[in-house]
Length: 192
Image 1 (cartoon, rainbow, N blue to C red):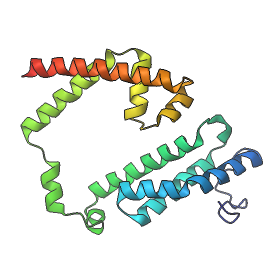
Image 2 (cartoon, rainbow, N blue to C red):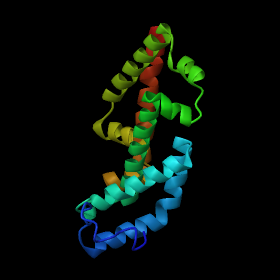
Image 3 (spheres, rainbow, N blue to C red):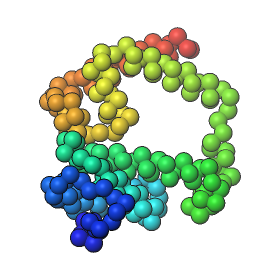
Image 4 (cartoon, one colour):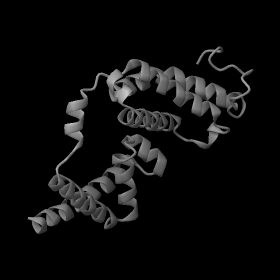
């Protein structure tokens, strides 16, 4: 971030703790603004929306009183941007004008978004079976799978977050996947 991007005279933005926090955020910006915008542009299918969301994600980090509490600011940045992008997508779905501006075929979207009753029942049963399978895992396996699939963190980010080696992380992930696959296979046999 350049000096004009982080203006200490702005009253509505709290400063990160000390110059170290500011330097850390500037370095984070320099290293990640391009990949973050690319990620968001792919997700949002709009360069201008990607720029807006990337800027808002950095502003939210800028408003954080203490950046020192985070071990992996890049993961926090991408997760914040991801959630902000999901908000934009939700807003587009609920606002017909946003959908029209985005060039979305409203008729095709309506057909794609309205599953049959049978598909809905099957989806609900699959989700219930998956949730049940997750509850059968050890707490560590469940945590690793949730961080990987729900939070979409990399192995390195999960390893840093949990304080375990990547090898241990892979073992938990493989064990969790295997148990879930076995339980879901049993569910499919029972459902058939």
